[in-house]
Length: 429
Image 1 (tube, rainbow, N blue to C red):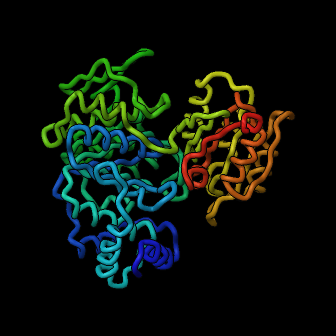
Image 2: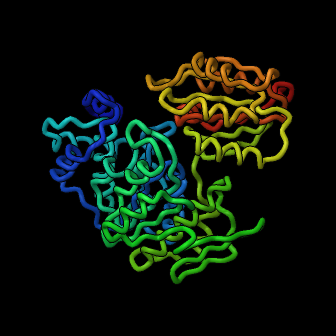
Image 3: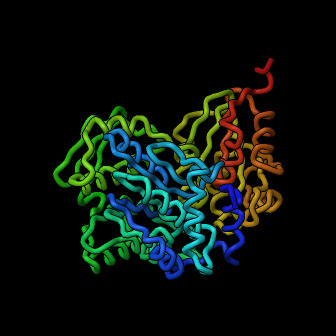
């Protein structure tokens, strides 16, 4: 196995299950690898907002001059996107030696694709001379592979219903799983405005230094700027984060709390905060692509994130027609997701996705037809996200907008080959 693609194919064959929660196997291999970080580590768990939180932490730390490494998942187009060092995705050939290390340390232990690749990326990051490591938890927290690393600070973003078959059927159960990333005596920031009691209870049980939004830190703002205050530090006159959406202020508040909690070890200036928030980028999170028509890309893939997307779309103003490209996993709460988008959607373009977990375009359309509330709305089926986007672009007028959502695969499929620049048919020469 000479290339990254060879190793990824190998990882897919190792374990009969895609998801197999539990730390025993991962910890065994991690110990053989002697995995440890010589820098502060921030772990980030939550239902939604993890990627945005990681991106803002990375942007601010980078502006402060720190050598920062980030692990996030899943990727949109290329696997290497999962690991960034100093703001750049690592090269495939940099990862290969670390896959080899994990294979040598595995000694027959069955690891899932996620577990194997997580260990390889953690190995690379631990070897990279970082000043700060930011680790996004894949699923849950307590039993996720990332949790073999003891974070110096934990962040829990919004908590809502997703992956119930693994994490529990209500916010309290899911919150308890997320709280598994907390550590005794170390700071933990909860940016969810109404956190489950299970998170607070677990923090108290183990003696975590808990930072709660509204108690230990808070924010305020008007149309031009916003301010943050918490535990001996204040920032005022801040520009809004470059990441769009009303929910991003909540994420940014959690970021500033975490950096304040770690200020003795990773100090950042007010200027680094301002510049980092102004320049932060993250594809696929309410990403608005200029053109005629306007294109909005969002990886929203559960009811909570779709509700946030709908609120953000509603705040964009008037568009004569909204064309919606949708592909999603079959194990999601599809009816609620479709129902929440339905009031804004004038035309639907359902698409197949290149994974066995996905709902088919035919199946999605059938679900929508059972829920539909407007007789004037049409729907069609397409073989891929790009094909669906092409159909939407062909039907759209310049003043319309196209929204693509439902899965990382949906947005990734559209971004493959580059960000599309749309031009309505009668504007083309």
